[in-house]
Image 1 (tube, one colour):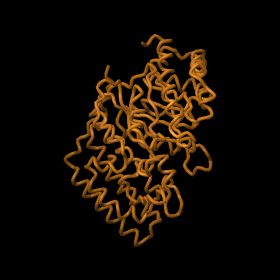
Image 2 (cartoon, rainbow, N blue to C red):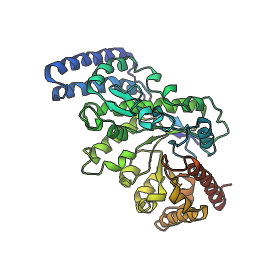
Image 3 (cartoon, helix red, strand yellow):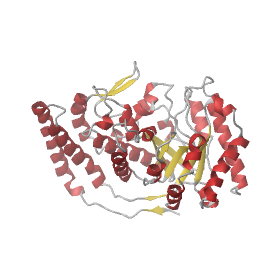
Image 4 (tube, rainbow, N blue to C red):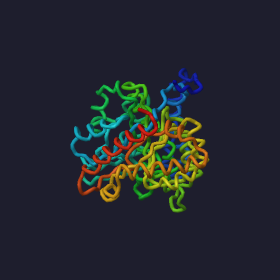
Length: 410
């Protein structure tokens, strides 16, 4: 059955040109303020925020909010995180295609463009990319210089897409036939993690910059949407992850970005992202916070964090009752923990987690129907290169087959 969201059509196309002219006039005022009051003044920040919001909101005001979409399949099918240790593009793609729900791999050991932060940075104003030193920085001065060109291309999907230079696999993936697959998946680095990772000339994360942060969240939302639309052109049941390892740090008093602001920002971000939409992270965040976001799918490292996760029964139940899909990352990809486990031990480990939830009133049949399986994490540091990671992919296929037989899904 199709999932249907209420249509909330906004009839603002007729005023689009006038609003853009107003936004560009605001930009001219902002540049003048830099000279008058300095780049860090509150006056500049206020003007820049008005300009950014006024410009990018046009994109969302001319989109029909609320779309029809296919549900993400569950029933213990397999997928995986996209970051892989391969330097051989063909082999990486074959490995990704070995799972039920394939994805396009990200290969940071192949070259620096493949780094997930670098891929997300393409066309973002103010980015200073040094390929030789493998560094990704932000310049306020360059941000101001780059922004007018970005504004002139807001209606161009290529501005938000990933170019062939930034991925050796993505455009090959877009040429493939997936008609025999239950779904396909894409991914992009999320705005919180990107904003934590990318620092300005004062070594300050751009996430803390109140003038840049609204632009960052809206820009990344459009990057997700453009990629999702391209994937839906290949398969009606395409969906997206945003990778957000940074979410586990926002509850630290030292983060400089509190959870109240983060919740507001993430809710606004996902309101701009088309469905189906979700988050992947390998850390241990506040699960109430994460399960309470308006997501369709949540991908987690259950091998390391499962015992903590299943203690949040109420939030898990509400997530499932909204139709959410959980991806249980159960097979470790690091050499030592992988060698310490077997498919038998991992099956027992996962069933024990589900037993805990069953004792607390969560129906196992519903849980299984709304669950996928994956390796626990990505791993780039194994001494054996790709060997253990590929074994982990094989193990998750075997675990899926065994559990699908147990629950009579085959």
